[in-house]
Length: 123
Length: 172
Image (cartoon, rainbow over all chains, first blue to last red; front, side, top):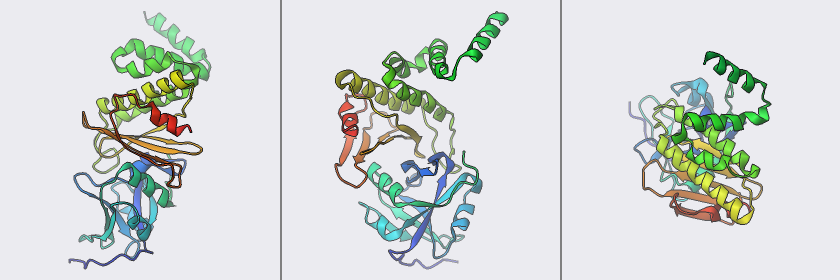
């Protein structure tokens, strides 16, 4: 089934998985905000169709991931970044932040986000 | 020979933690001289740069991250990229100390899923992110500000050139 593509309102939340390598004492590294390999966009889940827990459990190893939340409108305020709903067959919540992830953009994304599900067993 | 090795272990076991790093550095230099060039130069430097030296040594663990280290499609960190990052850090920290008497904080050296390395400083009035590329010859990109988007520095640089001005900015 093909899900319709919707407009994500500025005030809506997006969940981003953060691997434990990129967490230190609850602080998130800017390295956690990079585009998917070979692509110009970074994946997230739209809170309209996913809980934070569901977003974490989509990871290959959920126990190795925390979940951070970002507000769509604030991400759109970053240089060269677009927030788009990009549903896939098994995940209606799937969304993207498209645009080059320069050091500035990654540092700003790190500052805009906050953890909603911490690591269960911090490394 | 076996007894000599055992004696060495016993002596190391008796050392206080504060001396372990220095001894480890020395042993690494003897065992793998070609892999410790960057750290060597810092080891021979002043006590003021010890924390940077320790950050460099600690970051070697990143070379053990294989393909897919983030549970997805992350690229492994190559020895060449690590060496480029740590040499950039070591050389400029030393230059800043030697020429200006300024001691920088130890950064966090972080693997990026695309195989590059981030060098990240967050100090009282400044935050700086330098991304060391995985491709040979590609310039490193950097961005820094005061945490509120002011006093911005942004651009790219040749990691082999003298860049301690950037670390000087960090310490302002």
